[in-house]
Image 1 (cartoon, rainbow, N blue to C red):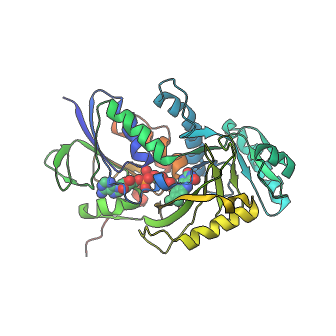
Image 2 (spheres, rainbow, N blue to C red):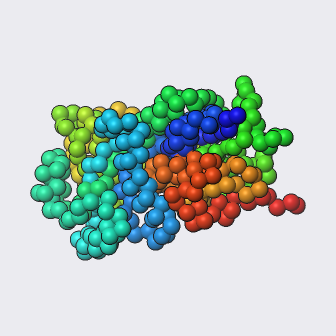
Image 3 (spheres, rainbow, N blue to C red):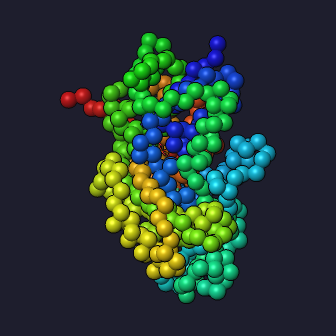
Length: 378
Ligand SMILES: Cc1cc2nc3c(=O)[nH]c(=O)nc-3n(C[C@H](O)[C@H](O)[C@H](O)COP(=O)(O)OP(=O)(O)OC[C@H]3O[C@@H](n4cnc5c(N)ncnc54)[C@H](O)[C@@H]3O)c2cc1C
């Protein structure tokens, strides 16, 4: 008999796990996703983890391997067809720093990191005129560090693609809020319309993991962070191959195809799960981007706003693995502001754990037991 597996939460982590598991004919797979506040479909889309000063080495391994995993993963998902540029493209990254000496420092860090991360590609400090060769509308006079291996991804489209492949492979997708509980054999997953039993469950519910595990008696060290951004339309420009622009501050600029440019994002720690768009706050991001980069961004029309919730642990480290004392229940969370980068690889790792295969990332380096604990009895 086939093994029955449920996935609760289909952002990039759950959808990637779903795609992986759906390829296995011995697994019957059901995916539950409610969708509200999803981080993945709100994300800016930057895949460029190498030029960070963050010191957590295990986090760095996760995001570095996550970025390296993307191209082969997507080639396989596309079954040999070209990866659509609207989903993912390696366009390179331009990193700006206020002080020129910081650029030299980051170049040195990048060159060291390239020894075991060749995906970073070519590194160079470009002058303003050299930047204009790549992005004609750049009006600034600052230099920037160029890394040719940086990429951009549309999280919402990526999830759609992965789930559509999973469905083609026979998986069921239920767009409902779900909860789970222990059953006589395995686990029950319930929505307001259904109850089904499973041998194994993946909880890829990011900021909402505490809600899923609370009824089973767990405290989960995860807090939400609100992020907002704007999508603008730059008419009359071929933006498809423009690099991702990372100035200092929050206003990153991520050009996509056909003049679509994403500007964001905010990092709001005091808003909980609030999903209200604060147009005034987002317009300050656009002002910053326009002042720094090109006043054309001021003339561009805002086509949409996006808002989502990131998930953070108290020490900012991500985790994944089997939930303590819940055999065959696996979870991941705490991917913070780099979860789109790490997501496909973390999803594959969860799928590997379900199949009892040793995952590509060492599970002991991301210990779930440090963040998911049985409530103390009072
Ligand atoms: C504004 C913004 C910009 C960002 N930019 C970047 C970036 O440029 N680069 C980068 O690497 N990362 C970025 N991130 C971070 C990244 O988006 C997240 O870390 C990542 O998407 C998390 O993926 P996930 O699958 O763990 O969770 P999510 O994408 O949040 O998905 C969790 C899903 O679970 C569902 N769910 C929860 N509970 C239930 C339930 N009970 N039943 C059913 N479904 C449920 C939710 O509705 C949601 O759809 C950004 C995030 C935000 C918000």
